Length: 112
Length: 113
Image (tube, rainbow over all chains, first blue to last red; front, side, top):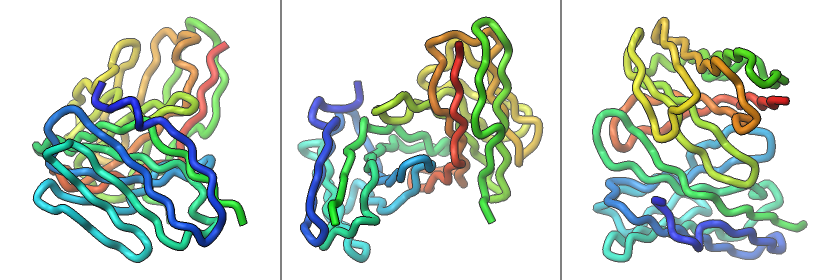
């Protein structure tokens, strides 16, 4: 498998709190993309971090990437009820195909 | 206006029957993908295509065929549907390349009885 055992998890938090989720991968990657999937919808990209970047921010989102430990994290600050979703990390190994390998995902439930 | 659409949105099929899932994109993207998602799990790549009339196998192609008759359209075909193929199927498109975002359709929920 591409992924470590810790990728499958569920988190329940109060609105306004911060949350961090992690994923680890086993093979070489040039990029980690984080997708959010709301109930009944298709996934949508929320942040992308390249292998030559250690950190990337976008609004309330912060992604980190440590290629030496082959792990990435996604943090959301000041969560809202609308952040309730499943969050997936996906890795790409380069090449024109743009193929991605998705992790199992983290279910985040924000309680208002 | 939705850029990746799928039809049908839901389907019930019988074991051994033929199922065709359709995907249409207006992103003008060269690459299109088919994934399956089982309850509580991530997405797994079945087939993908980078040009009309050509398809490539993904990570779990067994039991599935794909067809790309045009840049905009990509179909997934289950010739002999089986119980194990009950899942939600997603189509996506991208411009290709390592850093390209994939744009997903709303999914098709397939139940095989």
